[in-house]
Amino acid sequence: MSTQRRTFRLDYRPVLPQRRDVPIGCIGAGFIMAECHLAAYQRAGFRPVAIASRTPRRARQAARRYGILRVYKTYQELLADPAVEVLDIAVPPDVQPMIVRGAVQHARHIRGILCQKPLACNLAEACELVRWCRNAGVVLAVNQNMRYDQSVRACHSLLQQGVLGEPVLATIEMRAIPHWMPWQQRLGWLTLRIMSIHHLDMFRFWFGDPQRVYASVRSDPRTAAKFAHTDGICLYTLEYASGLRAAGWDDVWAGPAREGAAAEIGIHWRVEGTDGLARGTIGWPKYPRRAPSTLDFSTRRDRGRWHKPRWREAWFPDAFAGPMAELLCALEQGRAPSTSGEDNLHTMALVEACYLSAAEGRAVAPAELLQQTWTG
Image (cartoon, rainbow, N blue to C red; front, side, top):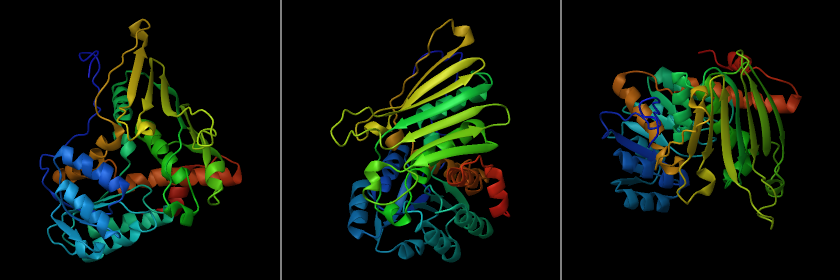
């Protein structure tokens, strides 16, 4: 990376634990586990020792690819392995709570769990899951991996140092056509809990919790032909006490690109402050081509100059080492991870507030939903 090393410090890489050989048990062997988690763990030097999947063939393939010694037919068999200290779960959100409950009730040797986002199908279920782990003394972290996208993390570093001054306006605009998972059809929802949750959590990572959110949604015409849903194309505005406004446009239709029209695909974000401006791109829509995200920024003292640091790492798969590294560091240091289950309840409440806002046509305070649901 280049430009202004003496003036600006861009901490875009995760902090790694001192001990990287903690034995990890992996549940799930689909795309996220096989192509993202395990690929990132291998580069970071982490140590998966066991894997299980509802499709044993996929588990065996992943085990051979990454040198995982033990393959179990069921997740219950994996939970019974006394060598596993940390559990890494990559399954649909309606299945995840069942696995977590089994771990905290029957696998006392497990010290930490990394769950997928969304943590559960709704805020109430997420609160229950967090409570189980807390009562069992198990450290819970959530795989909000966009916090570890390199451009997102670098912008967070600028904000923490005050380089941009007081934040005034932040936006993210996604024009992309994701690969939807079959389990979404049985759950009946699409974008808010799958894609928007990344961007809402990103705003929380940068700026903290908003006072209110207003959301407007409609169905995605392409996906509506396959199954009914309301949250296809999602627009939302977050209001902060400071006056900051943050807004997202999550457009998963992106025009009739699959139907013959030209495609214009990409994700762009922007943060305007009183002292500077940062803008960036998220490289994910170009996957499987390796496309690192980008950051450009300029400040009042730069006389119109743009700083354009670049890096080789990409969100998919490199950023996926971050949530596991944070969990391992938390276990090592006897603290809660920054992506803890308790913290993630605030993201879940924000997502739920978007659903309620869209349904009732009004601004909703996420804190009120959390107070009604989470008793601690």
